[in-house]
Length: 283
Length: 270
Image (cartoon, rainbow over the protein chains, first blue to last red):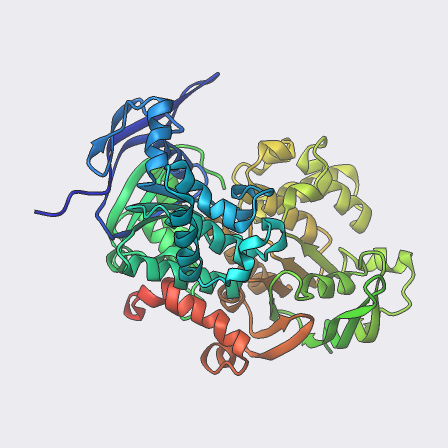
């Protein structure tokens, strides 16, 4: 039997009420993340990926389906229960813009210690652990007394990652974690995230960009118009995609070695998707 | 003769009192495409702006020479620049919405360019604008003509911008991070369009991006810029397979170790 997933979403439906009527953001979405697994969730504008990220954080209430975190059903949790769950630090989040996710008035040390102090751990233990995790994200201790505004973009992102790790979560959800970084810092952040994976933390990368996730994910799920149209081992999804949208996605991602991939096949797939949908889908 | 040539171009920041572009050279002929790769701050956008004669205040071309269609642009008057821009060299940038007037229908904005630059009548300008929207594969171009910018998606807006940029039949189009903010599938669609325009009209391209793979897809020659210096320059195949500079190797390693290049099997890419 496979181990109990650290995060499982089953038949999730989310709709928003709009003046024009119901807008289905997610339809029958199922996704399961095993301990230590790295899953990439790929979705472009309007795919529902942000809704999915918000739903597993408890910021959006599903209209149907179930969400479990480390075996506990959280679907019907109230705000207070979600807060308690977040305090336990089992699930952590890293968002795209590290400047906005760190309190500008707290030093690096205070920012990193905060989640531990909220858990009620003694300050001495918190301080020790902060230093250990600062080293794990390869930042120097002299940064402890700095404010976020005094750090480079790459350093800030590493502080954000360290902050997500200090509570020793079972799963970290990363929403476009490297999109805002330059090449050198992207490579450093990806190296770091790969080492986390090796340390047994489950990671969920949510991104619009297949290219930025394909090399680090064990599994890739493709979200298209609110539904998961493909879910499988990264290598299989990239090399033998089944759904027309996945084929277009793979064929569209710029790569070095296939730089001049077949334009005609992309054109065919676009036409096919438009006909299948029967909906205006101008880009 | 080259349509566009830059010879050891240097750009000086008068406020910081330092050179921010330290020697960029390339030559572009009809139907060719050259790519410039670099981070923000590498000087790639300033180089483009110098070519268009729209450097921000305090920035000046302090050395080297730029010539467009055989003509040195140093000393061009404002009026001469205006005649050159759009008609010979044109450009599209990252954020299409900010280049369109939000309170005017997009079709009228394209037609105005055609009217001013090509001297067409209102009726002919309108017809030409619809033709351009159609050429950029916007479905129902007559309807798009009537729409306001806020009614269009990012990909549609970028097509409208490209339509505007090529309305006066320029010989060179500069695409500066023109697809960066778009979804990957939409980016590919725009890049495919640029490749088709290049093939069908002989439009020469300057493709500027932080992503080496985007540039490699379209260009024959690549310049890698870092902190204003050209750290590497050569044919795209040479850059990809025999990179000489550590920074170029880093750009390649990113794709090979963490990107699609790592998992994608070449046999599949037929």
